[in-house]
Image (cartoon, rainbow, N blue to C red; front, side):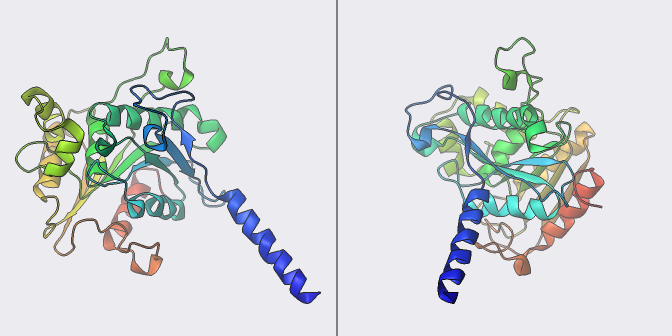
Length: 293
């Protein structure tokens, strides 16, 4: 009898955990614009990881995992969301369409813009403030995030779809060892997956986001490492300089040590190994009115 009771409790705990596991939500209720099929790779989604009510600040951040526009790195997605939750912030992981599945710009940008609009449209349901919705990205995901930070729009007030009436402008950005440029310092694999092998000079310039910053670009937290051998640190430095010239506030951290793709410091979610950038970013998020005081 005692064994059965223990097993019953264990099963109940398992089912409760499964019931609480966040579920991916398609960005569009029908086929996404420009879809090449109806497989999972053709359906961009957003998975909401909401902060515990007793910790929640009402802020939210859309997360764009890295992966060279050819894959999505889980340790730069779900793990970031769970870290944001410890700061009282809802983390919403974007599963955007990829060059490896045959997609090219502007499909990825459209997915990111739709994700920010969707968070605002469902703000009441998710109990978040539509005026405190940021975007975060690592590596190629940082390029996608910086693209939306410099290529947003106010939404269409006459759109039949209520989501499309929302602004796609993030209220802040967090860029982790990001690809920024499509110029000489770019990550070639990301560039090819995003733009193909022979993009025009015009689109290369448009997607070199250090050239697209304006005074309307939201404030940013940026970090990189000096010894990053995957994406040159000049990407982050050039974007920071562009923000400075435009009068946009930012918090910049260049750490000497660390290979590309560090994430939180471990491929597994391990708070004991969180890196210094998480502490610095948490402080900045509090200053921005997103994090816990």
